[in-house]
Image (cartoon, rainbow, N blue to C red; front, side, top):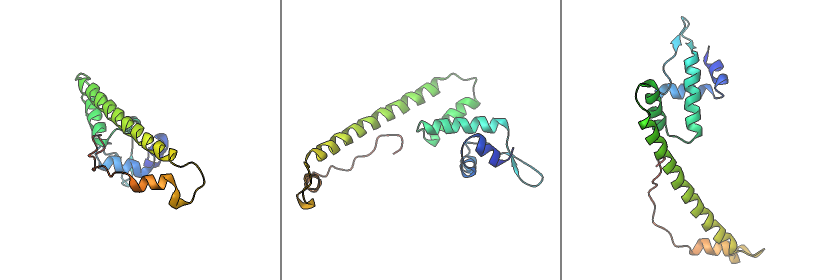
Length: 143
């Protein structure tokens, strides 16, 4: 099958396929005499796997690790379990960050009771008077 057919089968764009090929996540396809890419069923399965991982917000390095585990299927799944456990920890950390963000925004929103002038708005005053927190290094896998 050609790249357009693969893109349709995996619900993605041809640019996505080319990107994953350049990144080494998808193996290079066979080429026809006219130099067209031809893809197999294995390409569809691998591309869908990559897309499922990305839908779970996994990084390319995490996807590479899982693909390597797939390629070396005789090994145990300890690496896979460790990777998913670490990813869950990242998700939990991000949830905590988002909960804190929601609390801050809710506290700001509570400062404004109605239709006052912008220069008297509690939200604007709160934003202007907030302590600037030191830049936090993100501890999640996304950096």
